[in-house]
Image 1 (cartoon, rainbow, N blue to C red):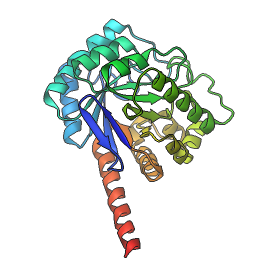
Image 2: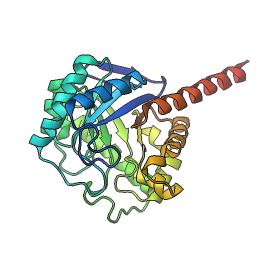
Image 3: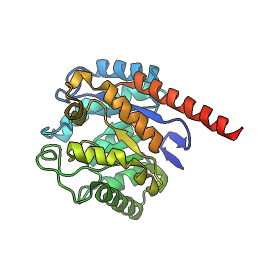
Image 4: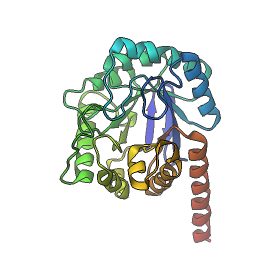
Length: 284
């Protein structure tokens, strides 16, 4: 299995990729305002790459529950200088976290190689033609509703089956729009229009998403469902996130998106070393 676009190509199986988060926003739930200055955001991205990030995901619009949308002009003002700065100085691929086709197109022109789209499964999405035209990699994420409404009353009959079917329909649509299957990775969207129970069901049945034949993206870093499960505040969710990461890695995840790059890399590399040692022991 391959995931490629623009200036990157990853072939699986291989060590799990770690995507470092660079939020260029005043209101993101975890680090809003810390890296709003382009220089600070670029330095943060370079630090995450030095910690072992395989990709950097730059976002200029908060997608926390209840977040208000920002204009395309403002989002471009926030992300383009950061993408240009990172693309010029950093060897790892840059991703733009956006649901706006205009921002995605401009970001790719500025040096981004991946479009990370939280609104991928929304009816009438116009992102597919941009992905096809630019040749960028694409992360298609599942979200029920919008950031402003998604946590008001999430509902599913069978969350695993419904999320999987929705991502499958998106793959079919992308193919009709001229997007190569190899450009696409899939994200079941933990925390995006899901209750605690929905999130746990998705994680517990993660292996079922591997049947789509595309790389899978996990995003659990510092999310509120961990706080609800463990009774912890925002600053004390790292251990829970690493537990989810280790579990998903054992179930077939290929990409982990995180604020906490260094501990995530360490967790994954130890897990992979133990798995390789166990496999050698069984073969002798």
